[in-house]
View 1 (cartoon, rainbow, N blue to C red):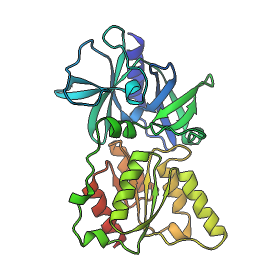
View 2 (cartoon, rainbow, N blue to C red; view 1 turned 90 degrees about the vertical axis):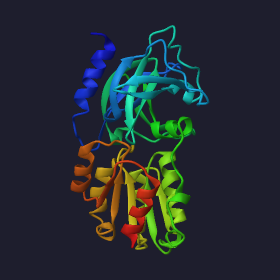
View 3 (cartoon, rainbow, N blue to C red; view 1 turned 45 degrees about the vertical axis):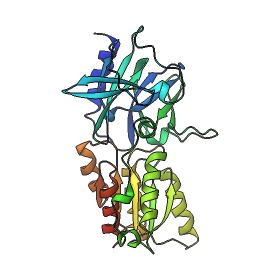
Length: 306
C-alpha cells in the first residue's frame, strides 16, 4: 500500500470522529514546496491523478478538466495555479487528487503530494497576521514546527468556479426593507462567505457587525459588558470551523452571557456532515444551515428577526 492509500485510510477513520473545538487536518505540498492544510471532514477520497483529464472549453485556467467519479463528472482544480503559482505537471509526474465536498458539491483538488494528518485544537490555529492572502484562512504548525497554511477552499472555489449568488432574484420589494431597525452579528473567517452574508443582510435593511473570528466577537462583547454598553442583537450568525475557537464553543459561551442567552443564533458550515446539526442544537443554536443559498439564507434571516 502506497503513502496516499495510507493517508486516505486514516482520513476516512478520522472523518468519522466528532470532537468539539478540534480540527483534523490533511497536510500536503503544492508547487512552491510549502506545507498546506485542509479539514479532513471535507475529504471524500484521495487518488492518483490520471495523466489525462477531459478538457472543458471556456473555463478558468486552473480547471484542468473533468474526471469521472462515482457516476458523475467532477472538476479537477489545480490548487497551485488557482492561488497564483506554477501549475502541477500531472501529465509527466505523479500527483494526486483530493476529492472534497463543499456545499454539497464535489471537486477534485490537484496537489503535488499528500503529507500527513494532524489534530490541532482550534486554539492552536491562528489568523494570519502581517500579510493579506484571501486564499489563506489560518496558520498552524506541524510537529517539527514547520508552518502550515490552511486554505480557504470556499474562496478558492469562488474565484475559480464562481458562486451562485444573486440576491436580486430572492427578495421582493417588501422583503428588501423587512429587517430595517434590526442588528445582526456575523462571524466567519472566510472572506467569500462573509461577503455573501454581508450583502444579503444589507439588502434586507439590517445593520450588522462582522468579525473574522469567534475570539474577536467575544472580545467585542466583553468590552461592552465592562462598560455596560452592550448592543442589542436581533440575530447572531456564525461559521463552525474557525481558527481560535469553533462555532460550537462560541455558541456555548454566548449562551452564558445574559444579553445573548435568548438571541436567535444560526450556525452554518460548508461541511454537510449530519453530526453538525445535532452538535449545533446541543450547543444551543436555534438553526443549522449546511450550505449557503441566497434564498434560504435571506428567508431564515427574515424569519428569525421578525
